[in-house]
Length: 346
Ligand SMILES: Cc1cc2nc3c(=O)[nH]c(=O)nc-3n(C[C@H](O)[C@H](O)[C@H](O)COP(=O)(O)O)c2cc1C
Image 1 (cartoon, rainbow, N blue to C red):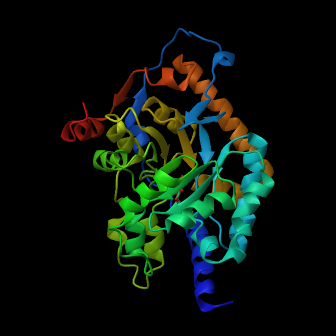
Image 2: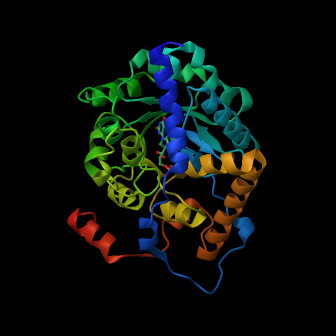
Image 3: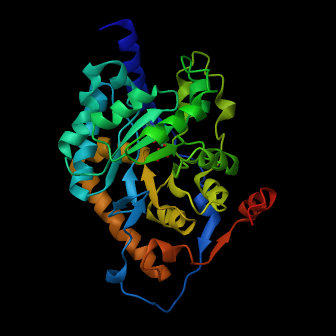
C-alpha cells in the first residue's frame, strides 16, 4: 500500500473512531424550543402521514442516515450494515465523501456496497466543493445516486492538519455541478450550521436544497483537533450555528428545501425541526454508535421505533402531516428570541 493511500485510509478510520469516542454535547439548542400541550385530541394516530419530498424525490419517511464514511475496510463494513438497515426500514441513506474512490478505484467497493445491498433504495452520493465537476458526475454514476450531497466544511479543513486551504472556487464549482447534475444537488454543512447569507449565495447560483447540519452533535473541530499534534485548537469547539438556529435563519427562504441534521438526539428533536420547516432530518453519529453497539437488528428496531414515536408526538400535537406541524405554536427561549431579533428574522 502506498504511503498516500495508507494516510487517506487511516484518516477515514480516525474519523470513525474519534466520532465514536466524541463526547456528547452537554446541552442542545433543541431544549430551547417548547411545544404547547393540548388536552383535547383532534386526530387518531393512524391518520398521521409524515411522508415528505426532497426536491423532486418522494420519500416515505422524513429521516435519513446522513453522510459518514467509505474509503477503508472498516468503512466498507459499516456502510454495508447501514445499507441493510436502510433497505429493511425504507429510509434514505447518504454515503460519506466519495473522493477516496474517485482518486483510487480500488476503494469504490466501499461505497458501491451500499447500492448492492439496497438496489431500489434512496441513496445520496457525497463529494466536497473542491471536487472536479466531471468526477462529481462520476460519483453519481458509481452508486446510481438519487441525489448528490456537496459538503461544505471550511472549519474542518482548516483545523485538519493536512486539510485544504483553498476555498475561493467553491461557489463556482457548486454552480457548475448544479447546472450539469442529472439528480438533485444538496449543499450540506458538516456540523457548523448555515446562515441567511449562505442561503442567499446558494440560491443565487441555483441551489434548491440544503442540509443545514448544525452544531450540537458531532463537532469536526473537536475531531480534527484530536488529530493535531499539539491539540491546540479546542477553544474553537462549539463554533457555528446550532441546527435550531440554522432553521430560524432559513425562515426567510421558503423556496428552499431545507433538511436538518446535527445533534438530533431523539424523535422530539426531529419533530421540532419539522415544526421549524425542515423537510427531513438526518442522523450520523447516533447511527454509527447504534450499528457498532447494537448491530443490524438493534438498529432496525431503533429506526422502526423512531418512526412510531414521530407519529406519537405528531398525534399529541394534533398534526397529521409535516406541513401541519409548521402551524403548531412553539415557545422559544430568550436566547433564541434575541438571536431572531439581532438577525432581523421576524
Ligand atoms: C464518522 C463521520 C464521518 C463523516 N463524514 C462525512 C463526510 O464524508 N461527508 C459529509 O458530508 N459529512 C460527513 N460527516 C458529517 C455528518 O454527515 C453530519 O453532518 C454531522 O456529523 C452532524 O450530524 P450528527 O450530529 O448526527 O453526527 C461525518 C460524520 C461522522 C460522524
